[in-house]
Length: 175
Length: 352
Ligand SMILES: [Zn+2]
Image (tube, each protein chain N blue to C red):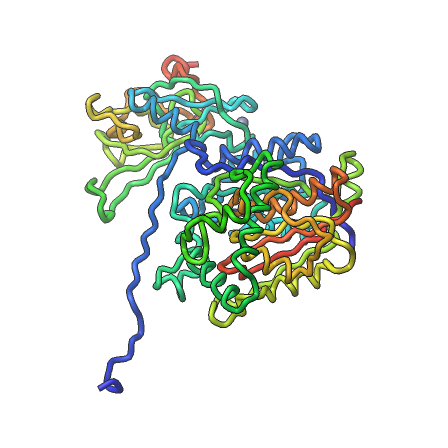
C-alpha cells in the first residue's frame, strides 16, 4: 500500500561530462619533444626565466614564451615529501618520495618521483638525475622518466636552487 | 555618483574551435590589444583586475586561476573573478571604482566551449541539484520557452526567422562574427526544426574566444588622453531557478534592471542584447521597451558568435565601439546568464 512505502530521502544520479582536452600550443611543443626524449624549456622574453614544463606564458610577466631551449635531465631537489599512506589506484607502494625538482637551466620546479635513494637521506639541495623508460615506451608524457635518482654531487645551497645554468652544478660548487 | 568611462575594448574572432590554443593563449593577445589602446604595458598599470569564466567549460576545478598566467601578476596585483560572464566582472569593477578603491580596472572574459558538450555543461553548472537529475539541457529549455511564446500567440515563427535573418545580415559587417551571410526569412523558415520549434539557426553557435575591456574614472580617461564613453547606469536582477515558477514569456528581471539602470531616461540609438536564441531577442526588446528608433544587435549579436563568459561583456564593448565611432549617442547593453534568461544585467552607455 502506498502509505506504507519507505520515505525516499535521496537518489543517486551520477554526472559524467566528457571533454576533448587540449594542452595548449606552448605545452604541445614541449610534449612533442618529450616523446623524443628531449626536455625543452621555454624562456620568457622579458624576465628571462625558463619554464619547464612550459604553459605557454610567463606567469610573472604575462607574455608568451616562444624561445625554446633543450635542458639536461639533471635536477636539484627544491622540496619533497615522503608518502606513507597508499593512494587509491596508485600502483606505487609506499613509502615513496615525491619531490619538487628544478632542472639545470630552469627556474621553476615540477613534481616527480624519486627512487634508488634512502628516503631518510633525501634533502633539499640534493642533486638528482632522470632514469628514463626504454625508448620504445616513450609517449607524450613526463612519465617517460620513471623517476629521479641521487647523483654523487655536492648539495646546492638553498639560495642557488633554481638558478643553475644549463651546464649544471659540477665545477660551480667549488667556486 | 561619479561616472565611469570605458576607454578600451577588444574581442577575439569567434571561432568554432580554437584548436591547440589553451585559455591563456586565447587571453594574452586580447589583453595586449586593450593595453595598446590606452598605452599601458600590462595589468600592473591598472588598479584592479576582474575576470569572468566558468570552470565547467574547462572541466577542471579552479581552472580560472590559470587565466591569471596571462596577466603578469608579479609583483602581486589586486585581482578578482566571477564564475559567470565577464559583464558581471564589469559590474564588480564598477563597484570597486565607485567605492574609491580603484581609479582603473581591467576586465576580461574567456571561454573555450568546444571541448565539452556545451548545452549539458551549462545546465550542470548552474543547477546541479533540481533539474540536473533529469539531464535537461539549455537548448531544450529554450525550446520549451519558444513553444510557450508561440502557443500563447506572443510571437510567430516568422518573427523568430526575422531575428535570425537580420543577425546574419548585420554580422557581414562584423569581422569577429562566426556566422554571417544573406539568409532571408523564407530561407530560415524552409529549414528543418532541430529541437522543435527551434531550428539550428535559431540557436547561437558554440564558439571559442575572449574579450577584454578597460574602464576608469573620467579624470583617468582624460589623463590617458583616449576617446571614451560613459557608463550612466548598470543594474542586474535574477529570477528563481525553479523554472515552473517563472513567466517564461516575459523577462521580469530584465524589465526591473532596465528601470533601475535608467534605460527609459533618453532615446536608445543602439542596443546589443545577449539573446542566445532568436525568440529571446523578442522577449528582451519588449522588456527593455525598445522601439523602431533603436538599432538592435548591429553586430549580429550572439546568434553570429557566442563567446561563453565573454559575450555579455562583448555587448557592452559593441555599444562602446559605436558611440566612440560617432554612430550613436546613447546605447543599451544587455547580458544574461542561466536558462531561459534567468539572470539579466543592463548597462546604459552614453557619449562623453
Ligand atoms: Zn617573464
